[in-house]
Length: 131
Image: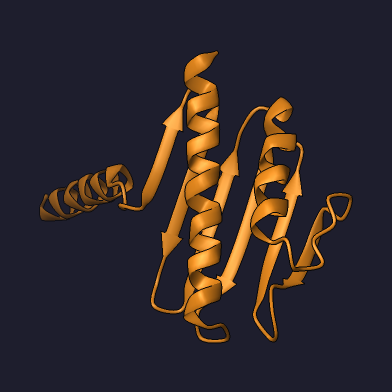
């Protein structure tokens, strides 16, 4: 009899733990989803949006990384921003993925990548609100 209660309590706890949402900087508007996760060591940006907005996102990245070797035709690449600062960038139709290691890069590069994430959020959410 006690075993049934233990099993029931365990199942209840598992159910509740599956319902907990971990807080990150997340924006959702319709089919647009932008998640920015930041830890002590890494900045991660994941975005899903309409395929028609891919050119707008590519334009933002190109403007912000003007001095780097960013090529719109290269979908997945590790970029050298300036000197030895690097970030991983993958841009496909309707998807963006950025990985930035804070330990390997300086504050200026971090600010630049953070600015890209903020501008992507603005353009995608304002575009979504207009449609």
